[in-house]
Length: 232
Length: 169
Image (cartoon, helix red, strand yellow):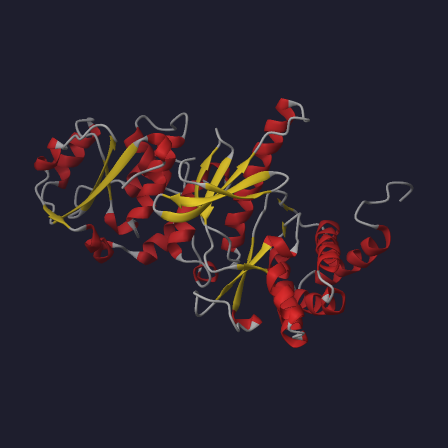
């Protein structure tokens, strides 16, 4: 990987920023975990690269914006993808709104995130690791800047699909929602009161089936994301 | 244009218009006399589309098709059917425009001699858009309006090419 600079190190992968085939790009390299047996490690890595690629394309087909993929190098366990320019994480945007005490924009933003997650689930895409850091936003009209952007002028770009899968079950969708809720509440002080707006966006988008998912979600909230395995 | 630095390879794409001898060219191409890919310009939106397909051909450890040049055509195509891919993206006897794609190592500087055998006019690559058939492209890559209203078409195309091995479409 020449001319790429490390920008982020996660638990699963390192992210590098650079230029690939002449375009601004991110290289996401999954590294080996020394504590795992090598053959398990390599099969998990391959599985995640496959899952990520599939979900990125499935999202596009469903009308959800995701980073374009430029190349996959299986020898290096690296995906080269579009560097989504002039973007911000949902995490930073929520913090901006919170800091300026802009409750109405915050609520509207939650509604729009809800619609995007609703669209994912409508298409049976389970993200598997929804957090406000794994959601990017870009502006619809003026791609240069996000200053003073209304939530309705934003395009929501989910990223990091390494743990995603295609699954139609309400249980998995419910867990996806629960994971996001926990992540939002633990990251953002104003998230708890706004989460209902997320759920109404979710329902507005996902008209056919969200009822069942939300029912499961209520169940999951009581028990946690692991299923109780005894005596059902 | 440079490909992945690991491949040490440069890509060259030339557009020929007013082609008069497509039939002979195709015959010679099939006999393996030309070291290049010849592609229908109507199915190419942007040179970057070819760059992604060629780059993938070079990065893959083993090729699905016989040569790196047929591999480029195969990679461009969303189907896994080799002969269908070559038929769709390769040139026809009656085509009057074509793209010639050659690869060369950074160290070499090989001027492709065979280009003289194409009875045609070389046009600047910017003219490619005059030949692009966007509706046909959307049909072949199965890009619906829902997708193209949010995602630029070039992004949709290159993503499909780059991830072809992982898709079970």
